[in-house]
Image: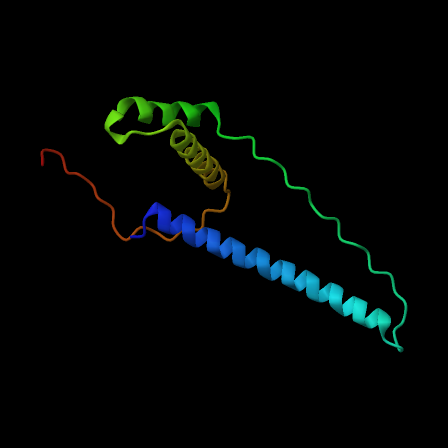
Length: 126
């Protein structure tokens, strides 16, 4: 099973690849419109400029995520968690909380049935 670091690294590489291909496609499209405009048989047509979205700063981790990360820092002194690492942990916790809320709010849960179900019988103890 891949670790969290490996997963995050692969996700970042995939996101970078997608953004790079999107930028390249946009530049290619702009280059084609510029080449078409300079050619002698070009017909004038207006190409609307696509609005560029402005990046919105993330609001940061929620109070609950900060408290959970702070409890890790207090309860695990042997881990030597710095304040910056605790803040990163809080943002990871916050991201997972958002993912969980999104997953729980899905109306169509077309998930496959489980392979098996464990049911403890009465009277049995481990």
